[in-house]
Image 1 (cartoon, rainbow, N blue to C red):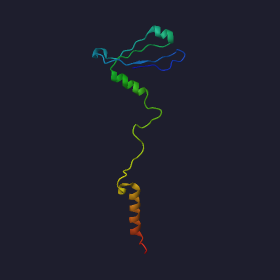
Image 2 (cartoon, rainbow, N blue to C red; image 1 turned 135 degrees about the vertical axis):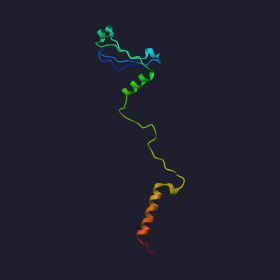
Image 3 (cartoon, rainbow, N blue to C red; image 1 turned 90 degrees about the vertical axis):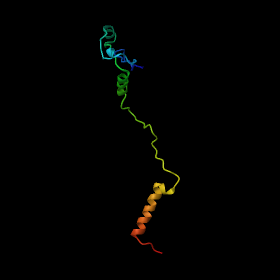
Image 4 (cartoon, helix red, strand yellow; image 1 turned 90 degrees about the horizontal axis):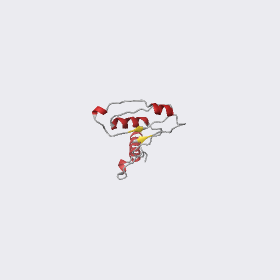
Length: 108
């Protein structure tokens, strides 16, 4: 995985390289400066060697939380269409009629 953000006036550049998992002896993080890089673009070169999981976690954290979030599942609510007694409007109407019958007597 290689990603490079926008370079503005050649003053800064950032790149991320994800490499396969290395042996434990090489898995420690290390940084070093590259004088040629610093002289050309007024920055330093930074190298991080680590596991693939760590590199991916860092890359994910850079883009989280997203500016706009869209849910992965549908946002609508589906109701069963078979039995009318399972529909919410039917249940509410039935409960209302039972309540009104018990509170006020019906007239012939």
